[in-house]
Figure: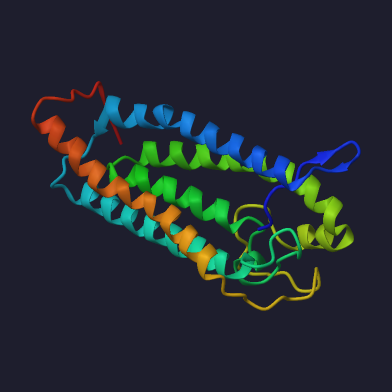
Length: 221
């Protein structure tokens, strides 16, 4: 995926302004952290830790988080070195126009599952989907201005968010080779690994509840 370049009335905004817009999005996500923590702190899983459904959800949560990390790194292998220059339509971009956002949303759902709640997982996934859908819509305007007909054909063939595995982009643009950018891959891997913090966090919160230091208000399935 190509980073956002917002459109001004007199043309494309500068790279500095684009970075500023990305910074605003990051600040918004950090401000949203308390909102995302509330369901975890104010509730507990309706399934006890030793039950099969709870253990199955925790396993699936870890699997979703690992898939998130792998998917984001996969996308980084193709976008590295082509940002702001080329329309990427191969690799994971053959199946979804925004693989980074899709896999990030899977990671958010995985966090909810590690806490043993399908409801929290669904809420987290929906939150990620809505936030990223808004960002995708704004980015799409800029990409249409940058790549014109090639981008519009790409949009007709490839969905914006949910992958379409049966079809992939063919003639939307020339297929560019994968370019390995060690710095970009390392940065993506480190950023994505933050999702793994949910695993020890779930154990810590369970310990606090057992000690009576954290009292949930309602059970959630």
